[in-house]
Length: 505
Image (cartoon, rainbow, N blue to C red):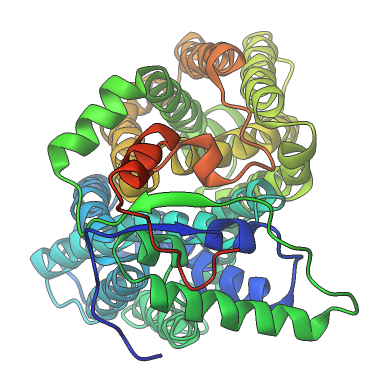
């Protein structure tokens, strides 16, 4: 598609958002899901593999002079720091320069950093490229969630977003199983297996990069930035592909929006919009991200230590238990996702947070009573995380749809960075110490802290969650560039009639 010169400063009336939202599900939408959403599988693969190979990397003959503490501590912290900084850095650029340009660049950064991690020859090299890998994956969260929500029809947005964000755990299962094979010296040498796991991540990223070439720029972003002719071409192309699969004609769009096109929005305006105009929604986003971050850290940071210290599970067998709870994590968004579009956001977000918190309180009580074994504790965790994973995924959905179009990527980046920092910095400091003491009371306290914060977030959602199901993004949060009816009428009286976009009804 030829790129046209952006024409900003014009006021146009268009039905392009409504045309996207009224489309039935099609093979084209599956292309978007595969091209954009599968990167979370890589994230889950990355995080799990690094945790599982820590012991092997520190052994003599691994080809890398690094300690286990450096891998699980410093490398993990650098990955988290890179993800937080990457989300904020790339998020701002995503709002300014477009979704497609940035989701191609961020994946390329991830690919290159992962490939260079595979050829690490010293500790500093490994640590530096773990940071850059996180820097790329952090940018993916902002660019991808923005693009997906702006391309997927309103009727399906909730379930698709939850399924995609929950696919992190598919990667976690793969990482657990891959590590078991790659670290077995009967198959691969000690200095080869861990390198191949990172190389595989780079190869998968390259495949996704090739698929992404066919994903278009968000027509909504093009409209606002003065490129309505390109937006019209993109939407017409999508309609033609969807129409070819349908036996009936597409329904007519039933809404229009008038916008005053602008090339960019200042950072100050973004901050004022998110933290002043949408203060309650910011409190909601903050609560959801902090709640899920602490619940997950209450379980996952002490996962291996709890199994080995309290139930004598061999360290090299904990990966099997982790694979089981990872399956439970993915099953939640997959099976509950549709309910977020039918029963609604407020009920489902509040209930998944509250149920997971209450179940974790119950697990803490059973653990304190000595009523659990390794298998039954894992079953309890599966039940907790079945609901918690759906809730955590809905946190990303929430912040990506309740703020105006011009602030979307930056809002996702901010709340993602906030939750990731809470989980990756304060989480390890608090929960690793509690679960590492070997005292039942300390582990129970860790569970109770995570459960309490999750329940608190659920209560906030019960009061503040936005009923966004099946509604257009423009209806949930009016774009900053949208022209009110009063302003439009005043403009008409002055004789400046707004020209209609090529696709206007």
